[in-house]
Length: 439
Image 1 (cartoon, rainbow, N blue to C red):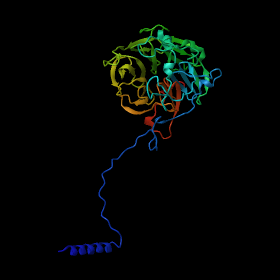
Image 2 (image 1 turned 60 degrees about the vertical axis):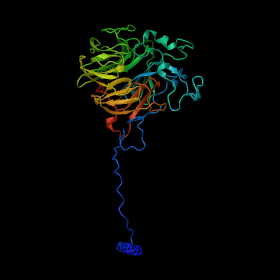
Image 3 (image 1 turned 120 degrees about the vertical axis):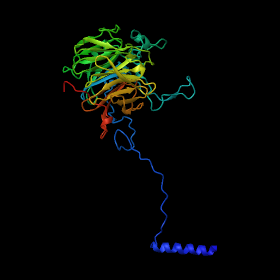
Image 4 (image 1 turned 90 degrees about the horizontal axis):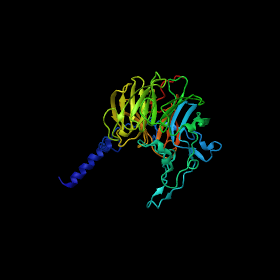
Protein backbone atom coordinates (compact mmCIF):
# COMPACT_ATOMS: atom_id res chain seq x y z
CA UNK A 1 0.00 0.00 0.00
CA UNK A 2 1.59 3.25 -1.15
CA UNK A 3 1.41 6.71 0.49
CA UNK A 4 -1.27 8.00 -1.93
CA UNK A 5 -3.71 5.22 -0.99
CA UNK A 6 -3.08 5.86 2.75
CA UNK A 7 -3.78 9.58 2.37
CA UNK A 8 -6.99 8.95 0.42
CA UNK A 9 -8.19 6.55 3.13
CA UNK A 10 -7.58 9.14 5.84
CA UNK A 11 -9.61 11.74 3.94
CA UNK A 12 -12.54 9.35 3.48
CA UNK A 13 -12.59 8.40 7.18
CA UNK A 14 -12.35 12.04 8.26
CA UNK A 15 -15.18 13.09 5.93
CA UNK A 16 -17.42 10.30 7.18
CA UNK A 17 -16.91 11.34 10.84
CA UNK A 18 -17.62 14.96 9.95
CA UNK A 19 -20.86 13.95 8.18
CA UNK A 20 -22.02 11.83 11.13
CA UNK A 21 -21.34 14.73 13.48
CA UNK A 22 -23.82 16.87 11.58
CA UNK A 23 -21.18 19.23 10.35
CA UNK A 24 -20.01 20.02 13.89
CA UNK A 25 -16.34 20.13 14.76
CA UNK A 26 -15.38 17.20 16.92
CA UNK A 27 -12.23 17.18 18.96
CA UNK A 28 -10.58 14.72 21.26
CA UNK A 29 -11.26 15.13 24.99
CA UNK A 30 -8.70 17.36 26.71
CA UNK A 31 -5.88 15.80 28.62
CA UNK A 32 -6.68 15.60 32.32
CA UNK A 33 -5.25 18.53 34.31
CA UNK A 34 -3.25 18.07 37.47
CA UNK A 35 -5.52 17.97 40.49
CA UNK A 36 -5.75 21.42 42.15
CA UNK A 37 -5.43 21.52 45.94
CA UNK A 38 -8.60 22.43 47.80
CA UNK A 39 -7.80 25.47 49.98
CA UNK A 40 -9.87 26.62 52.92
CA UNK A 41 -9.56 30.36 53.50
CA UNK A 42 -9.35 31.58 57.08
CA UNK A 43 -9.89 35.09 58.34
CA UNK A 44 -11.55 36.78 61.27
CA UNK A 45 -14.46 37.57 58.95
CA UNK A 46 -15.20 34.47 56.82
CA UNK A 47 -15.47 35.28 53.13
CA UNK A 48 -14.04 38.79 53.46
CA UNK A 49 -12.50 39.96 50.17
CA UNK A 50 -9.12 41.67 50.10
CA UNK A 51 -8.69 41.67 53.87
CA UNK A 52 -5.43 41.59 55.80
CA UNK A 53 -6.74 41.17 59.34
CA UNK A 54 -4.42 43.95 60.50
CA UNK A 55 -6.74 44.52 63.45
CA UNK A 56 -8.07 40.99 63.44
CA UNK A 57 -11.80 40.72 64.08
CA UNK A 58 -12.06 44.42 64.97
CA UNK A 59 -12.40 47.82 63.36
CA UNK A 60 -10.44 50.59 65.05
CA UNK A 61 -12.39 53.64 66.23
CA UNK A 62 -10.30 56.44 64.77
CA UNK A 63 -9.94 59.63 66.80
CA UNK A 64 -10.60 57.85 70.12
CA UNK A 65 -9.83 59.07 72.75
CA UNK A 66 -9.72 62.86 72.99
CA UNK A 67 -6.11 64.04 72.98
CA UNK A 68 -4.76 65.82 76.03
CA UNK A 69 -3.64 68.55 73.61
CA UNK A 70 -7.29 69.61 73.29
CA UNK A 71 -7.47 70.58 76.98
CA UNK A 72 -6.86 74.24 77.89
CA UNK A 73 -3.25 74.73 78.93
CA UNK A 74 -2.16 71.44 77.40
CA UNK A 75 -2.05 72.41 73.73
CA UNK A 76 1.62 71.43 73.42
CA UNK A 77 1.29 68.10 75.25
CA UNK A 78 -0.04 64.61 74.63
CA UNK A 79 -0.18 61.24 76.38
CA UNK A 80 3.01 59.71 77.74
CA UNK A 81 3.62 55.98 77.89
CA UNK A 82 0.18 54.36 78.07
CA UNK A 83 0.37 51.60 80.68
CA UNK A 84 -3.14 50.57 81.70
CA UNK A 85 -6.79 50.72 80.71
CA UNK A 86 -10.04 49.49 82.24
CA UNK A 87 -13.63 49.71 81.04
CA UNK A 88 -16.15 49.96 83.87
CA UNK A 89 -18.73 50.27 81.10
CA UNK A 90 -18.71 51.36 77.44
CA UNK A 91 -19.36 54.88 78.69
CA UNK A 92 -16.72 55.04 81.47
CA UNK A 93 -13.22 53.94 80.55
CA UNK A 94 -10.16 54.59 82.74
CA UNK A 95 -6.89 55.50 81.02
CA UNK A 96 -3.66 55.10 83.01
CA UNK A 97 -0.43 56.66 81.74
CA UNK A 98 2.90 58.16 82.61
CA UNK A 99 2.12 61.84 82.55
CA UNK A 100 2.52 63.92 79.40
CA UNK A 101 5.02 64.21 76.56
CA UNK A 102 5.54 67.09 74.13
CA UNK A 103 3.02 66.90 71.28
CA UNK A 104 5.61 66.82 68.49
CA UNK A 105 4.44 66.24 64.91
CA UNK A 106 6.07 63.44 62.98
CA UNK A 107 9.31 64.80 61.43
CA UNK A 108 10.10 64.56 57.75
CA UNK A 109 12.45 61.65 56.89
CA UNK A 110 16.12 62.61 56.72
CA UNK A 111 19.45 60.90 56.30
CA UNK A 112 21.49 60.45 59.48
CA UNK A 113 24.89 60.70 57.89
CA UNK A 114 26.60 60.96 61.29
CA UNK A 115 25.52 57.37 61.94
CA UNK A 116 26.21 55.84 58.54
CA UNK A 117 25.39 55.93 54.84
CA UNK A 118 21.75 55.52 53.79
CA UNK A 119 20.42 55.55 57.37
CA UNK A 120 16.98 57.14 57.03
CA UNK A 121 14.89 58.37 59.95
CA UNK A 122 12.03 58.04 60.52
CA UNK A 123 11.21 55.04 58.37
CA UNK A 124 7.99 55.49 56.42
CA UNK A 125 5.05 53.65 57.95
CA UNK A 126 6.77 52.85 61.23
CA UNK A 127 6.53 54.58 64.61
CA UNK A 128 9.21 57.14 65.29
CA UNK A 129 9.10 58.08 69.01
CA UNK A 130 9.27 55.47 71.74
CA UNK A 131 6.98 56.97 74.37
CA UNK A 132 8.04 54.41 76.95
CA UNK A 133 11.69 55.48 76.72
CA UNK A 134 10.70 59.16 76.73
CA UNK A 135 8.34 58.92 79.73
CA UNK A 136 9.70 59.33 83.26
CA UNK A 137 10.92 57.58 85.26
CA UNK A 138 13.65 55.44 83.73
CA UNK A 139 14.58 52.03 85.02
CA UNK A 140 11.57 50.19 83.72
CA UNK A 141 13.01 46.73 83.11
CA UNK A 142 13.48 43.87 85.53
CA UNK A 143 16.43 44.12 87.91
CA UNK A 144 16.57 47.93 87.84
CA UNK A 145 16.39 50.11 90.95
CA UNK A 146 13.31 52.37 91.15
CA UNK A 147 15.14 54.64 93.60
CA UNK A 148 17.32 55.72 90.67
CA UNK A 149 14.40 56.04 88.24
CA UNK A 150 14.46 59.81 87.76
CA UNK A 151 18.26 59.89 87.53
CA UNK A 152 18.12 57.23 84.82
CA UNK A 153 15.47 59.22 82.96
CA UNK A 154 17.42 62.50 83.11
CA UNK A 155 20.46 60.75 81.63
CA UNK A 156 24.12 60.48 82.53
CA UNK A 157 25.44 62.99 79.99
CA UNK A 158 24.23 66.29 78.49
CA UNK A 159 21.73 67.24 77.27
CA UNK A 160 19.90 66.18 80.42
CA UNK A 161 16.15 65.70 80.35
CA UNK A 162 14.11 68.14 82.37
CA UNK A 163 10.63 67.86 83.84
CA UNK A 164 8.41 70.58 82.46
CA UNK A 165 10.34 70.57 79.18
CA UNK A 166 10.79 66.96 78.09
CA UNK A 167 7.84 65.63 80.07
CA UNK A 168 5.21 66.73 82.58
CA UNK A 169 3.89 64.66 85.47
CA UNK A 170 0.20 65.40 84.97
CA UNK A 171 -2.90 63.40 84.01
CA UNK A 172 -1.78 59.95 85.12
CA UNK A 173 -5.49 59.00 85.25
CA UNK A 174 -8.25 60.30 83.02
CA UNK A 175 -11.70 58.87 82.37
CA UNK A 176 -13.40 59.02 78.98
CA UNK A 177 -16.85 58.18 77.66
CA UNK A 178 -17.88 56.02 74.71
CA UNK A 179 -16.95 58.75 72.23
CA UNK A 180 -13.56 59.21 73.88
CA UNK A 181 -14.35 62.59 75.44
CA UNK A 182 -12.47 63.23 78.68
CA UNK A 183 -15.13 63.38 81.41
CA UNK A 184 -12.94 63.08 84.54
CA UNK A 185 -9.40 64.20 85.36
CA UNK A 186 -7.92 62.56 88.47
CA UNK A 187 -5.00 64.98 88.69
CA UNK A 188 -5.41 65.16 92.48
CA UNK A 189 -3.55 61.86 92.72
CA UNK A 190 -0.65 62.56 90.33
CA UNK A 191 1.66 63.25 93.27
CA UNK A 192 0.99 59.77 94.65
CA UNK A 193 2.40 57.88 91.69
CA UNK A 194 5.89 57.23 90.40
CA UNK A 195 5.23 54.65 87.69
CA UNK A 196 1.56 53.63 87.64
CA UNK A 197 1.41 50.24 85.98
CA UNK A 198 -2.17 48.86 85.86
CA UNK A 199 -5.70 49.91 86.78
CA UNK A 200 -8.78 47.84 87.69
CA UNK A 201 -12.18 47.54 89.27
CA UNK A 202 -12.77 44.14 90.85
CA UNK A 203 -15.67 42.45 89.03
CA UNK A 204 -16.93 41.23 92.43
CA UNK A 205 -16.98 44.59 94.22
CA UNK A 206 -20.42 46.26 94.19
CA UNK A 207 -18.84 49.52 95.38
CA UNK A 208 -16.60 49.56 92.30
CA UNK A 209 -13.40 50.71 94.01
CA UNK A 210 -10.64 51.66 91.59
CA UNK A 211 -7.28 49.94 92.11
CA UNK A 212 -3.94 51.21 90.80
CA UNK A 213 -0.73 49.17 90.96
CA UNK A 214 2.44 51.31 90.98
CA UNK A 215 5.61 49.31 90.53
CA UNK A 216 8.07 52.10 91.43
CA UNK A 217 6.36 52.86 94.74
CA UNK A 218 6.04 49.11 95.50
CA UNK A 219 2.40 49.68 96.43
CA UNK A 220 -1.24 49.24 95.43
CA UNK A 221 -3.69 52.11 95.92
CA UNK A 222 -7.44 51.60 96.29
CA UNK A 223 -9.73 54.59 95.60
CA UNK A 224 -13.43 55.28 95.87
CA UNK A 225 -15.17 54.97 92.52
CA UNK A 226 -15.48 58.74 92.13
CA UNK A 227 -11.79 59.25 92.87
CA UNK A 228 -12.39 61.51 95.85
CA UNK A 229 -10.93 59.24 98.50
CA UNK A 230 -7.90 57.01 98.91
CA UNK A 231 -9.50 54.10 100.73
CA UNK A 232 -6.55 51.74 101.26
CA UNK A 233 -2.85 51.30 100.54
CA UNK A 234 -1.45 47.76 100.32
CA UNK A 235 2.30 47.44 100.61
CA UNK A 236 4.73 49.94 102.11
CA UNK A 237 5.21 52.86 99.70
CA UNK A 238 8.79 53.33 98.47
CA UNK A 239 10.12 50.39 100.53
CA UNK A 240 10.79 47.19 98.56
CA UNK A 241 10.49 43.73 100.06
CA UNK A 242 8.84 40.34 99.73
CA UNK A 243 6.60 39.67 102.70
CA UNK A 244 3.09 40.40 104.00
CA UNK A 245 3.53 44.19 103.88
CA UNK A 246 6.06 44.73 101.09
CA UNK A 247 6.24 44.28 97.33
CA UNK A 248 9.16 44.48 94.93
CA UNK A 249 7.76 46.30 91.90
CA UNK A 250 4.28 44.70 91.61
CA UNK A 251 2.61 44.67 88.21
CA UNK A 252 -0.91 43.17 87.90
CA UNK A 253 -3.87 41.82 89.93
CA UNK A 254 -6.44 39.04 89.40
CA UNK A 255 -9.51 38.27 91.53
CA UNK A 256 -11.48 35.19 92.60
CA UNK A 257 -15.27 35.47 93.06
CA UNK A 258 -14.98 35.61 96.88
CA UNK A 259 -12.95 38.81 96.57
CA UNK A 260 -9.55 37.27 97.31
CA UNK A 261 -6.92 38.44 94.87
CA UNK A 262 -3.47 37.63 93.55
CA UNK A 263 -0.71 40.16 92.94
CA UNK A 264 2.07 39.56 90.41
CA UNK A 265 5.17 40.71 92.27
CA UNK A 266 6.81 41.65 90.01
CA UNK A 267 9.56 43.21 87.90
CA UNK A 268 12.14 42.60 90.62
CA UNK A 269 10.12 40.24 92.76
CA UNK A 270 9.81 36.57 91.93
CA UNK A 271 6.52 35.60 93.50
CA UNK A 272 2.74 35.83 93.48
CA UNK A 273 1.10 37.11 96.69
CA UNK A 274 -2.48 36.23 97.70
CA UNK A 275 -4.71 38.48 99.83
CA UNK A 276 -8.24 38.18 101.17
CA UNK A 277 -11.02 40.55 100.14
CA UNK A 278 -10.05 43.01 102.88
CA UNK A 279 -6.42 43.12 101.76
CA UNK A 280 -5.03 40.82 104.44
CA UNK A 281 -2.01 38.79 103.32
CA UNK A 282 -2.72 35.05 103.06
CA UNK A 283 0.22 33.38 101.33
CA UNK A 284 2.74 33.69 98.53
CA UNK A 285 4.53 31.35 96.13
CA UNK A 286 7.44 31.55 93.73
CA UNK A 287 11.23 31.55 94.02
CA UNK A 288 14.07 33.45 92.29
CA UNK A 289 15.12 31.72 89.10
CA UNK A 290 17.95 32.01 86.59
CA UNK A 291 16.72 34.74 84.27
CA UNK A 292 16.11 33.59 80.72
CA UNK A 293 17.10 30.00 81.41
CA UNK A 294 14.79 28.76 84.15
CA UNK A 295 12.89 25.51 83.64
CA UNK A 296 12.20 24.47 87.24
CA UNK A 297 8.58 24.63 88.42
CA UNK A 298 7.82 27.59 90.65
CA UNK A 299 10.99 29.52 89.85
CA UNK A 300 10.29 32.89 88.22
CA UNK A 301 11.87 36.02 86.78
CA UNK A 302 9.87 39.15 85.98
CA UNK A 303 6.40 38.12 87.14
CA UNK A 304 4.60 40.35 84.66
CA UNK A 305 1.05 39.08 84.71
CA UNK A 306 -1.44 36.93 86.60
CA UNK A 307 -4.88 35.60 85.68
CA UNK A 308 -7.37 33.19 87.26
CA UNK A 309 -9.79 30.69 85.77
CA UNK A 310 -12.74 31.20 88.08
CA UNK A 311 -14.22 27.77 87.34
CA UNK A 312 -11.18 25.75 88.39
CA UNK A 313 -9.44 28.44 90.51
CA UNK A 314 -6.24 27.78 88.60
CA UNK A 315 -3.77 30.67 88.68
CA UNK A 316 -1.91 31.48 85.44
CA UNK A 317 1.38 33.34 85.91
CA UNK A 318 3.36 35.12 83.20
CA UNK A 319 6.97 34.14 83.93
CA UNK A 320 8.03 36.71 81.37
CA UNK A 321 11.81 36.50 81.40
CA UNK A 322 11.67 32.70 81.17
CA UNK A 323 9.19 32.84 78.26
CA UNK A 324 6.55 30.62 79.79
CA UNK A 325 3.17 30.57 81.51
CA UNK A 326 3.16 28.63 84.77
CA UNK A 327 -0.10 27.29 86.22
CA UNK A 328 -0.81 26.76 89.94
CA UNK A 329 -3.77 25.83 92.09
CA UNK A 330 -5.38 28.48 94.30
CA UNK A 331 -2.85 27.83 97.08
CA UNK A 332 0.23 28.03 94.89
CA UNK A 333 0.83 24.35 94.16
CA UNK A 334 2.43 23.91 90.75
CA UNK A 335 0.24 22.12 88.18
CA UNK A 336 1.74 22.60 84.73
CA UNK A 337 3.14 25.14 82.27
CA UNK A 338 3.57 25.95 78.63
CA UNK A 339 6.42 27.63 76.78
CA UNK A 340 5.91 30.45 74.31
CA UNK A 341 7.19 29.15 70.98
CA UNK A 342 8.69 32.42 69.67
CA UNK A 343 12.32 32.94 70.69
CA UNK A 344 12.57 35.23 72.45
CA UNK A 345 9.04 36.11 73.52
CA UNK A 346 8.12 39.00 75.80
CA UNK A 347 4.54 38.75 77.02
CA UNK A 348 3.16 41.93 78.56
CA UNK A 349 0.23 40.37 80.44
CA UNK A 350 -2.11 37.40 80.70
CA UNK A 351 -5.88 37.81 81.12
CA UNK A 352 -8.81 35.39 81.12
CA UNK A 353 -12.29 36.55 80.11
CA UNK A 354 -15.78 35.15 80.41
CA UNK A 355 -15.08 32.78 77.51
CA UNK A 356 -12.35 31.06 79.59
CA UNK A 357 -9.69 31.82 77.01
CA UNK A 358 -6.32 33.36 77.86
CA UNK A 359 -5.24 36.53 76.06
CA UNK A 360 -1.72 37.97 75.95
CA UNK A 361 0.34 40.42 73.91
CA UNK A 362 3.87 39.65 72.74
CA UNK A 363 5.99 42.78 72.62
CA UNK A 364 8.46 41.14 70.25
CA UNK A 365 5.98 40.07 67.58
CA UNK A 366 3.47 42.91 68.20
CA UNK A 367 0.59 40.42 68.22
CA UNK A 368 -2.49 39.92 70.32
CA UNK A 369 -2.61 36.22 71.18
CA UNK A 370 -5.62 34.12 72.14
CA UNK A 371 -5.01 30.68 73.65
CA UNK A 372 -7.18 28.02 75.19
CA UNK A 373 -6.25 27.20 78.77
CA UNK A 374 -3.95 24.39 77.64
CA UNK A 375 -1.86 26.79 75.57
CA UNK A 376 -3.20 26.01 72.10
CA UNK A 377 -3.24 29.09 69.87
CA UNK A 378 -6.75 30.00 68.74
CA UNK A 379 -6.00 33.18 66.80
CA UNK A 380 -3.39 35.96 66.59
CA UNK A 381 -3.38 39.38 64.99
CA UNK A 382 -1.45 42.63 65.01
CA UNK A 383 1.31 44.48 63.20
CA UNK A 384 3.51 47.38 64.17
CA UNK A 385 2.93 50.69 62.39
CA UNK A 386 2.10 54.37 62.84
CA UNK A 387 -1.50 54.29 61.58
CA UNK A 388 -4.66 53.53 63.56
CA UNK A 389 -5.30 49.87 64.21
CA UNK A 390 -1.66 48.82 64.41
CA UNK A 391 -0.10 47.83 67.72
CA UNK A 392 3.14 48.84 69.41
CA UNK A 393 3.78 47.75 72.97
CA UNK A 394 0.29 46.86 74.22
CA UNK A 395 0.84 46.93 77.98
CA UNK A 396 -2.79 46.92 79.15
CA UNK A 397 -6.02 45.55 77.72
CA UNK A 398 -9.71 45.50 78.59
CA UNK A 399 -13.06 44.62 77.07
CA UNK A 400 -16.49 45.97 77.94
CA UNK A 401 -19.95 44.46 78.18
CA UNK A 402 -20.63 45.16 74.50
CA UNK A 403 -17.48 43.36 73.37
CA UNK A 404 -15.46 46.48 72.51
CA UNK A 405 -11.72 46.08 72.97
CA UNK A 406 -9.43 48.70 74.52
CA UNK A 407 -5.63 48.74 74.54
CA UNK A 408 -2.95 50.88 76.18
CA UNK A 409 0.28 50.98 74.16
CA UNK A 410 3.28 51.92 76.25
CA UNK A 411 5.69 52.29 73.33
CA UNK A 412 3.28 54.08 71.00
CA UNK A 413 2.06 56.33 73.80
CA UNK A 414 -1.58 55.93 72.85
CA UNK A 415 -4.87 54.32 73.77
CA UNK A 416 -7.11 52.69 71.17
CA UNK A 417 -10.65 51.41 71.01
CA UNK A 418 -11.78 48.62 68.67
CA UNK A 419 -15.31 47.50 67.77
CA UNK A 420 -16.08 43.93 66.63
CA UNK A 421 -16.37 43.71 62.84
CA UNK A 422 -19.68 42.71 61.32
CA UNK A 423 -19.90 38.92 60.90
CA UNK A 424 -16.62 38.38 62.74
CA UNK A 425 -15.93 34.78 63.72
CA UNK A 426 -16.75 34.75 67.47
CA UNK A 427 -13.82 32.41 68.14
CA UNK A 428 -11.38 35.15 67.11
CA UNK A 429 -12.86 37.83 69.38
CA UNK A 430 -11.40 38.53 72.80
CA UNK A 431 -13.79 37.50 75.56
CA UNK A 432 -16.04 39.90 77.40
CA UNK A 433 -15.37 40.58 81.10
CA UNK A 434 -16.30 38.01 83.71
CA UNK A 435 -19.40 38.61 85.80
CA UNK A 436 -19.62 42.14 87.24
CA UNK A 437 -21.25 42.68 90.61
CA UNK A 438 -22.68 46.02 89.54
CA UNK A 439 -24.54 44.71 86.48
